[in-house]
Amino acid sequence: MFFFRPTYVFDKVNDITPEFLKKKHIRGLLLDLDNTLTTHNDPVVPESSLRWINEMKAAGIELMIVSNNHAPRVEPFARKLGIGFVCEGAKPLTIGYSKALKKMGLEKREAAAVGDQIFTDILGSNLKGIRSLFVFPIKPEESLPFRFKRACEKPFLPRRDSAVSSGR
Image (cartoon, rainbow, N blue to C red; front, side, top):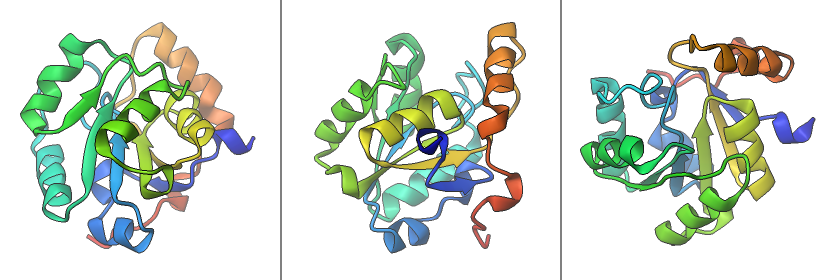
């Protein structure tokens, strides 16, 4: 059960603040893409994500996307945000997280992974031994495989009222 439990819970990615990260001695974030920074398969960078990324950069927080998607999906999005990426990250395996930490020059204790899926993002970061920051999905996916996966995750999902308050 431990491997499915996030270290911290937030309502949305924008609720994660530089102040919170500094208090927890987190210098870098490994970011999921779909339903964390934007809706599933959406090529448009939401203004809220762009503002949040810029706030993190201004605070000196290192950022890198770690996605199971292929380069044609991840690379243009990362380029628009001006951050690095690891595609085909094979989450929940730890390969993508290891590559990202190496590229960022960070130790596990200095990083945290942010994502919306228990069986990929949270499990993968916990297996790697880095802190996991769960965010609730921006929008429910409609495909049958995703609906099935989300149904399987239900027993492991944190309660929304357990989310860390951003104070914004």
